[in-house]
Length: 164
Image 1: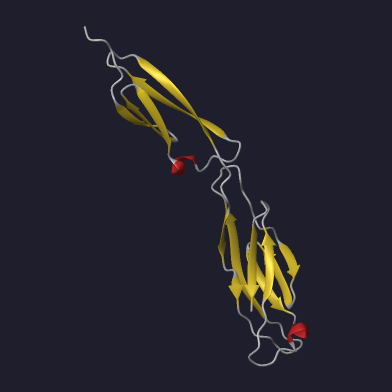
Image 2: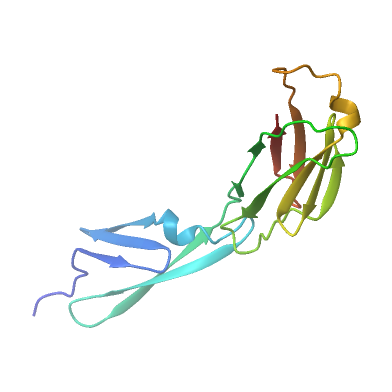
């Protein structure tokens, strides 16, 4: 009778694939499948090989996560004209943040930040920049200034909103 062998194969696991060639196995992580693992998180991918006589052997692979950067989306610039004293001049946009790590749920919390020429109010992911017309009255026609407001998410991610 022929001796049992583990034949060459590739088996998909939960976080990657194991390829067996001439008795040597190689495990390759699928980064798309492992993205949800955050820093200090691990998962075990168990791959079962079956020999020609039906004997099975489990190979346990420990996959360690890394901390992926958060992604910020939304509107980060605006253009607004000054108004006369007493006028309310404002512009709005939205901002959001996501993180693929399953244990990270960053957010931009409601805040009011005073800029050089106005203030930015952030409420439920919608920002409104309101011009302080007393600070812009010295601008001549055709002149413009920029006000940069930095929003900081709960995970430390910064995003500038630039208003001209």
